Amino acid sequence: MKALVYDGERTMNFRQVPDPSPAAGEQLIRLEAVGICGSDMHAYLGHDERRPAPLILGHEAAGTIVGGADDGKRVTINPLVSCGACAACQSGRENICPAREIISMAPRQGAFAQFVAVPDKNLVEVPKDIPLTRAALAEPLAVSWHAARLACSALHPDVQPRALVIGGGTIGLAAALALQAMRVSDVTIVEPNPARRAFLSETCAQKTVTSGEGQFPIVVDAVGFAATRAAASSLAMPGGVIAHIGLGEDQGGLDVRRMTLQEITFIGAYTYTAQEFRDTAEAMFEGRLGDLDWFETRALEEGDGAFQDLLSGTVAAPKILLRPWP
Image (cartoon, rainbow, N blue to C red; front, side, top):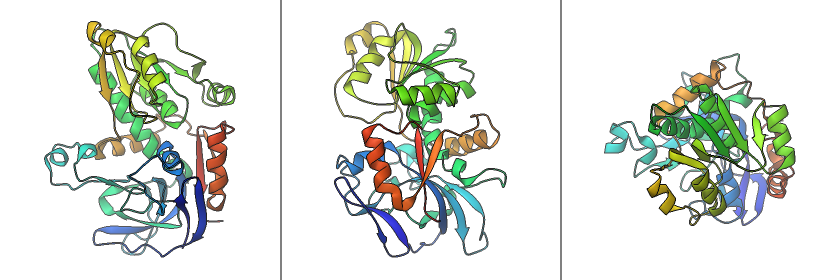
């Protein structure tokens, strides 16, 4: 098969690789669309030791099952593979399973390819009226669904929910959509890039600003740099909640003194549970997360250029989807 392979820092090559061989309990998926995630960009820049070269990246994907009783079934992929037996898995918190794996993270190859092997339990069937390009957005939407649920659950019930989302990329937009689906009607996205801000306003009907002002019951940091954590610390109201999703850099930024004195709750939100992935997919299929028309598509063989364009900040759409087949 053909795949886009991460061969070293800032090096992606479209080349022939061996076809995947599904293990027992796995299905072979013919991929139709796969999104470029921020974590893929971290690996591309050589910043993720969990993704050593050479490796096929990509984990936001949808396609069709090849072979077996379910041949031709259209599916979206939950890329988080858990053991199913530990205390975390048994309590429905697969996202913190100590033995968890994610496709596109060694040792599992990813989905920037024509085929990928995935466990049966990680597949969610896609209705015939839902394009597989949109179904591929289930994974990033689930990340933000998880964070939004945690934030809403942690907020005091007497507080009228309003939210500020820092970062207007895929995860930030998805957080805004998830919060709105959870009846947080007043959501503002901070996005400094003017082209991205215009896209969010005009195409996605989101309220956007260049920088945050005031104080908010819920602040979502979808970027994860020291500067955005510092902003979140100052913008959360007393008794408010910060949901931290971004993995931009490891340290710095939090005003722990203010968070302590003002009883601000800080929640780290990582991926999603298996149930949350299914819940997100259902919300997508029912139209509760909007039209989901905020992506652009390119051929998989153009993937290296897509990474370069994302790095340069010249892409207005929050998401680029790669198509493995002509």
